[in-house]
Image (tube, rainbow, N blue to C red; front, side, top):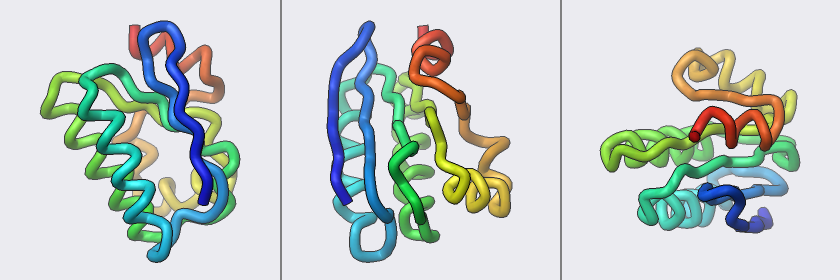
Length: 110
């Protein structure tokens, strides 16, 4: 798994690429929580993620809960079809704010 972090319009954008599975989810968790700890809105770009398992989903959920507790926002953007299917099966597509584009996500967190 690879990642890229950038700042845009007052938000942190975390682009994850590769699989988020049992092997890589601890790293994803660490990255996401460190961004959420800044107490700025976080957009998670999942366009480059082909596969996510339950441990990866747990990292996303924990990051969302942490953001909410701190009064910040976490939004998923450009979610790949594979990730969208997994989130839908777990009914987490109703829990997360999911946006089609980064720009739409930035509008949601303003």
